[in-house]
Image (cartoon, rainbow, N blue to C red; front, top):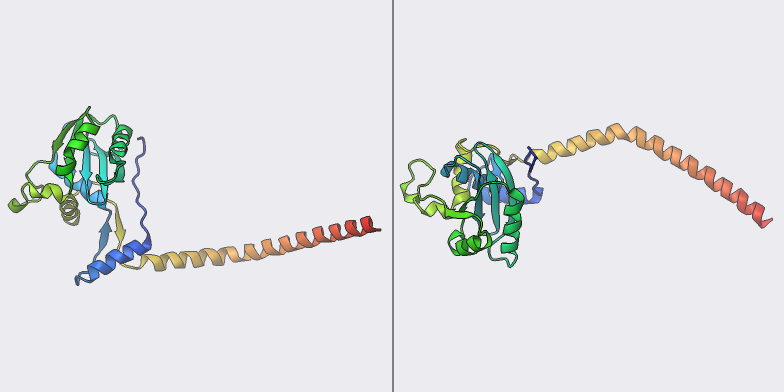
Length: 223
């Protein structure tokens, strides 16, 4: 609750899979945006509030739960999809750990309509409402109402246009990062190599001395 930092960790293999999928469309990505970052960006652009509130985005594979203040992201939780049997329990836990964040709860995501009642039943102390029909993207009348189920896509457009409020977590997609990492490892290894050799020599000498003492002691006992 008191943390002021946000970070995300992704496997390099997953990043490579995303790059390959985009490359199949003849597009070269410049960055890969963390899914919850895009979701939160869409909600913060669409919801007008003068006090802290909570968002629950019920997506296909996961549910993003976040507490949003006037100008900052107060907290973030990622739980399972609404189809999982533990969804209600996990949702209560996520919201409880984000308190105090007000009673207002804004609902959206791919499964927001089918899960609205279960969310309201699980969080009976909150005022549950759905996202506004008006899409936060400029000049997009065709997205009116429909965008509630496409929050991540809308947020991604906002991030790409530089209109998303921070924090936005992204990963480099240039493919140079692994090479840089390997070069740093090589530099660290070359700097530590002399000390490793000295340590090995000392360990070998200590082992030889201990073995000599044990051999003499065993010989004395045999005699």
